[in-house]
Image (cartoon, rainbow, N blue to C red; front, top):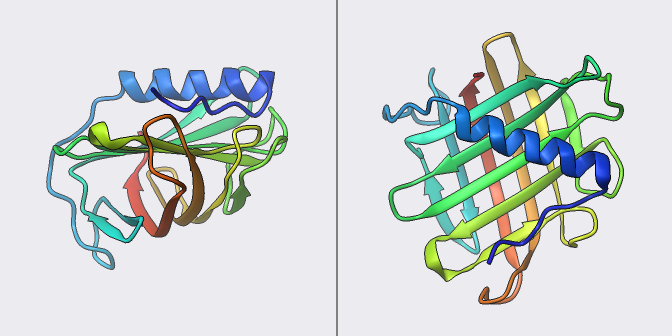
Length: 174
């Protein structure tokens, strides 16, 4: 069972749109470069276990119907681990920019979900609980870089809280 990430009616529509966009994206399975070099990478720890160099990582910056933008970051690996982060700016007409986006019940906000194969799902979002933030440190027309961390609430079958730490990414925008 997945934990629903819901922060409000407008945010739910945005998150559904981001998930649909991520599913429609062409995902490359090339091997990413290590942090500090040129190329796509994402690294993070979940409950003390390191995840690095996911070959199926993507970032989607998408226009919304109000002229603004929303961001989706997703990473998968062959072992069934999946990380999804959605970011919404302060107003529907605002653009994602360099800066920090924390979990909350009103924009600007970020939402997090981590699935550990068949071992459970954790989330951090406004009304779900937990806390977290994503900081965009560089944004160009083709690349986004940043950091993230979260303390997440587990769904049925998940053991306790989930801690997402030391997250870093440099991804080509799709």
